[in-house]
Structure formats: structure tokens, C-alpha cells
Length: 495
Image 1 (cartoon, one colour):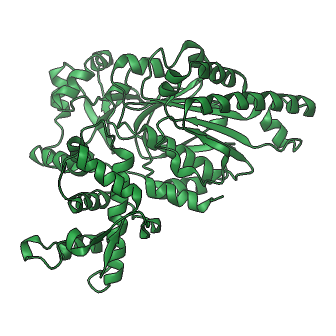
Image 2 (tube, rainbow, N blue to C red):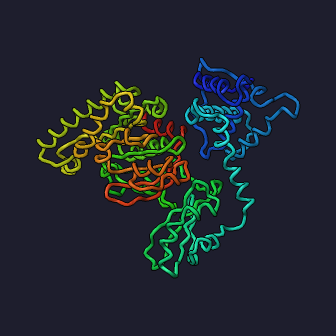
């Protein structure tokens, strides 16, 4: 008889949801159905690695999962078959074996999403609502307000006269090119952006202005409902990387697209270090995965070594078999992280001597002249505040690396949910000049990261403001990298 198989980790997730979630004390098969629904909301198909359960997992019959053999009002087998057939664009009514296989893949991927994106300390009801129903609710809200945005009427209410010359739709925003006959209205417009956002029903989301080179024309970037967003994923990022191989970037990264949907990239080697900050659910961890995916697809293991510090012990475990991961390059506790940073400081000093002996200024010059063959090193810290809380000595070595490691080809990517002065001290601030702010709680946190406000008004889920060293703030929408994409990436470059 056909069955759906799970792993031990899947079973632990099911039991956790039973204890802490919506279905506390109820049946496991109900959680499997929720996992199926979660997976079907994702845009890319689940990978083949979900085909095999483990001996310490469980088996579930189609009667449990789909209600097969039960009365019609309890039998959802044909409905599930139809949903999965439509998702994969193939007839699964004629292929029972493939239906079971894809059913298992979706259920196990959904459980994997519960495991990685829901925290036990967070409300499971709210998590389900956000992951399954929030877009539908937003779409209904938009339907009830089907009329176009009364932007000009709202502008008149704040005393600004103008007309819209052009409208450009980006992946999440619409840019209105607003002509102001009276240039004095510009300052009035900027002072009243919060009022304008409130009038348009944008809640905490803000309207941003964009300078143009057209006389008396300002761009207004207005968020659209989530149901109309156009997301970019791993496949799009891979295509951008392939198309951008002619660039001179040493460590190219592709975090996402600009507000008009154009792919955006920068050279991490020129950053030379990066701070990433954002609240839970802002897309911070997904952004880190996008940066890792960019580097891995752009550089060979001989060109790049990656170190991952993950105090939460959740986000980076999937990279254990990555070919670019340095030996013992994945650490999950403060003592091991401190030891690793000490060793990297020693490696920095060793490389400084190598550069001096070769008569070159930095690793880039040594590679160009072919007198040095050393890989770049990129260190990712998933939760800086947790690391510093456990060991203040860690900051000493981070500052030391941030001050001197650039020339030797060692670069830091530091991420935190708490962009406060305790986490991001003055020494780190002065030596980590490139910053990315996803959605934060307050304007004060935005100022700590970017030296200006704005990140508190982003739309969430990968919406970000980036300021690279010496540049202006730019708004981007992040690439969505999920667990299947990471598994595919590791499979491509397995040790």
C-alpha cells in the first residue's frame, strides 16, 4: 500500500506543532495537510532529496493523509491530486506513483518550512496566517478598493499641486513621476509623506521619494498590495550571475532587484565588510542565503573559502557539505566562534607577511600579477548580538579583522536582529562601512544602520535599503532563496 514517509526531524517538527501550535493534542495527519498547503504556496517545486524518509521516521497511509477510502465528505484524494497536478503541470490521475512521490515531497518540504521559518517562541496561529492567507486577505482588500490610487486628490489635501507624467511598475512598488509646477511644493511634499501614506491606507509602510534629472519632476515610490508583487528566486539569480561573468568583480553578490525590477549586484571585496540588520520576519536570513548563493556560483572553492558562525544553530546547517566551506568552517557556539576568529586574525597576519614578501599591496594585486595564489575568505555571522552576549572578547577580534583584513582578502558579513549601540559599537561602525537595513522597529535603529531613517517604513519580506561605502542609500527587493534552493546549491558543489 502506498505510504508517505517522514524523517526523524519531520517527526520532531510535527510533535512541536502539536505541543505549541494550532493543533495541540490533535492528529498528526492534520499537520501533514497544513505542511502540504504551505509547500503549495511556494513558487519553486520541491527537490528530489525529499523522496526518502529515514528508518527513524514514520509512515502515513493515504487514508490518514488524504482520507482515501472514507466517505466523500472526508476523502480529499482527488482534490489533492488535482492541486498537485496543476502545480506541476502534469496529469497525476494517470500516474499514481508520481502522485505519491510529489505528495511526499510537498509534505516534507512544508514541514521543513515550519522547522526553519517558525520559532517555538512565536505564535503558530499568526505564522500560519502570514504564510498561508495574508496575500489572499490583501487581495480581497484591494478588490474592495478597486479604484486607482487617488494620489492627486491626496496631494491636494496636503496643499501640493502637480500632475503625473509617467507611471512605472516595479516588482513591489509603483513609481509615479510627479511634475510640480511650483518647485516650492517639493519641501511641503517631503514634510507630509507620512500623511500621504496614511491617506492612502499604507499603514506602517512609507512612501519614498526618488530624485530625477528632469526639471521639477520627483519620483514617488508607492507600495502595492503583496498580491501584485513579482518575486525573484534562485533561478533568476543564477541567470543574472551567468550574464554578469564579464564583470571585473572579485566577489560578486546579487542580493535582489532595484525598485524598477533591474538586477542589482556589487563587489563584496570592495565593500569591504557588510552589516545586515532587520527584525524577525524581515528577510534577513534569506538575504544571507542569497549572498552565499551568489558567491558560491561565482567563485570556485580554490578562489573562495567560506566560514559560517551560527549561534542560533538553525540557518547554516544545510551548508555542511558545501565545497566552499572551509575545514571546520561551521561553528555554532561562542567558544568555538572566538577560537575561529582568533585563528582568522592569525591567518590575516600570515597573509600580511606573504603580501610583503611578494611586494604587492593587497591580494587583488597579487592575484593579478600571479605572484600569490590564495583564496578569498568570507566570514558570515548569523546573529551578532547573540555572539557578543555570550563572549565580549569576540568583538575585539571582529574589530581587528574589520580594521586590517581587507588587504589580505578576508571579509566579514555581520547580521543582527538588534542594531543597537551595544551590538554595533563605535569601533565596528567605523570599520564596517557598508550596510543593509531590512525592516526595523524604529527610526532610531534605522539611523544606527544607515545614518538616516526609512528602514522602519519598508514593506518587509526582503525589502531593504543598502548603503555601500561612499555611496547613497538605494532600495532593493531581495531574492527569495528557500530550503530547496540551498539543497540544490550544495548538491551542485558538494565536497
